[in-house]
Image (cartoon, rainbow, N blue to C red):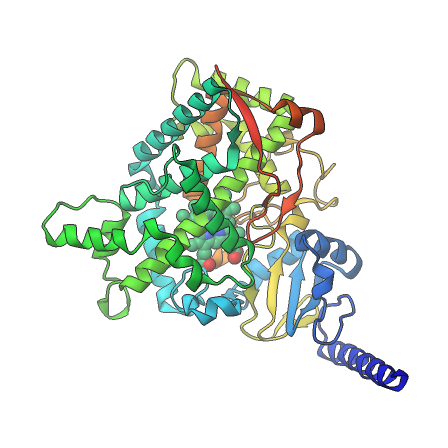
Length: 476
Ligand code: HEM
């Protein structure tokens, strides 16, 4: 037995030494030592963005880890993020696709996973930026968002009259889904008064984002029944029966002939696009909102300042318009501060090196996974004073933005893969936050007030609060 154990120990340590030797010859960025087979998987823990930030303090802003067989390079500062996302955008714009996604061929259809070299990816990005997220399109759908936000207000109003707490992320998630579905199909897909149904929807989407390393998409797609295929089939039937078009995004999609050789999108492509939009758009917006409320409820002076600003700008009007957002400087600063401290996608989406690329004197090998730890950048003491403190004031009078030009603040990523839904997300988040702060006073339930808000995180592609935030609303 001793001989057997000694042999294993010898093999393991030789592999370990050989790996180190090979790595130094390949001139990879430095990183922690890794075990044979599992590599550094054990180093990740339950909250990888935090573990990676700690490791980067020791090993540097550009660091190599072995995640199983996969060489992974992590950028953890604004400068290295700029190198990856701007200077070498072309080399690192492909996605590192998880196996499960590949297994159900979702990667060959989805905007989120297709490589930028694919004409289909380019057609989808063009379609979305021209027809869904362009300012004139967003302006045209403003009344839909206003109506959905009014429904949210009525729902919160009813809960407040019943003395019931508001499950913040659930009501905002439901509203965000309906904002998206009304823009796309001209119909709601979730019901604020049937929160159980929305809860199931949210569980499916959150879970898929949680286990994004191995999402079994082929299992979870059929579970999202209200989306598809019924609606597609229904709309196609309406079309053949001569019903007038609804002039929403679905009509644009059904009429679309912009693929190479003038083809339109087939059913599978349409389905993948709708899933992309709903998955990418709902949980991220709900998480942003929930973190914002969690911070504001613990920072009453910031909450008060936001409400004062709203009273000044909105005056005696009862409804807030999207055109008001530009004047709400403090509210905008709150959203930036939330993105800095709690970026909804803390590691963005994984990229892949298309070719072996030199970065800061090191070599990032072809095929390596490349990640940017935007969570670490948001808490970098070299960039931010008192980085752990929620202080929206730090953004007042500063030109810094989250649109991908300032590498200190990258909640939507940057470069050619930057989030295409950002213009819609920003309207939704600001409008919902402004309206709920303007129409209600908020406080924590007594028990939470006494014990403090649990700010623990649940890691996935989207970083959410581990304990859903509940708050009591009082109409003003
Ligand atoms: C990609 C963040 C809302 C659709 C991404 C990425 C991030 C992100 C970090 C990856 C960027 C990269 O790799 O550099 C967010 C945040 C949101 C939000 C923080 C809300 C607060 C939305 C909305 C939609 C959307 C509302 C659409 C309705 C997409 C799509 C991609 C994407 C389709 C994949 C793009 C590609 O790979 O080419 N988002 N997003 N997102 N987002 Fe968003």
